[in-house]
Length: 250
Ligand code: NAD
Image (cartoon, rainbow, N blue to C red):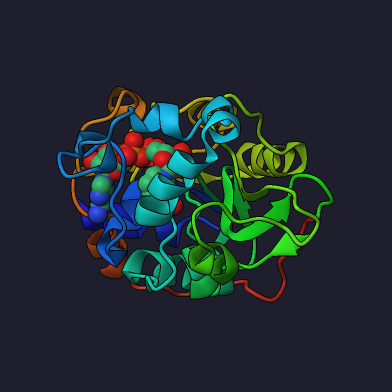
């Protein structure tokens, strides 16, 4: 199986990686829909409800109780998947990472072109005056974090009922359209519009690496039901033969 992946990677120079919460479980951050994911845990409200725009506005105390306990993970380290993707980009094989994750681990691993479809826990801003705040400020605030102007601070993460950032969306679509290989990993492909971006892919190889089956398994050229960190960790990464002569596109 992973020989087939190695062959595909060795023949590609414009890979796009499209990932989800499963990419970070090997860093100790739980996903949403696995058996041990956040959606199976007991809260007074369903997580989908808590991390919605309406809930954030109506009950910021409860929102932040959940957010700080379950989503604001600041001490996680990149795993083999994050590190290998950064190495693939550096070697000139990978164009960009498109992620549904909000944990910032791709950037921490050294990836440079990362489209964070759902934003990042590392950016926060005042909903009244726009002032920026660090993630540590949010963590250390009591209950609901407030700005010096008195406004409510919101993490720069896309909540249910909110739209995706247009620049990020356009960048991700552009790269997926140009990709020769699309590796989709660690995502249940059930969160839209993110999952819908796969339809823009017109390249040669669609690879799916996911522990559980996904709705796209039947359409992929290669399906690997295994841990993404372990699978990518086994890849040998070499630059394309003509590296250095490649035209780059922005
Ligand atoms: P999901 O929870 O719906 O699905 C995760 C998928 O990853 C599952 O199908 C599971 O089988 C698979 N998986 C888990 N660990 C894996 C591993 N080590 N290797 C391979 N596959 C593995 O996640 P989703 O599709 O990304 O949608 C959830 C939403 O929740 C996203 O929008 C994301 O923003 C958000 N989220 C983000 C984080 C994070 O930033 N780390 C964590 C939880 C949820």
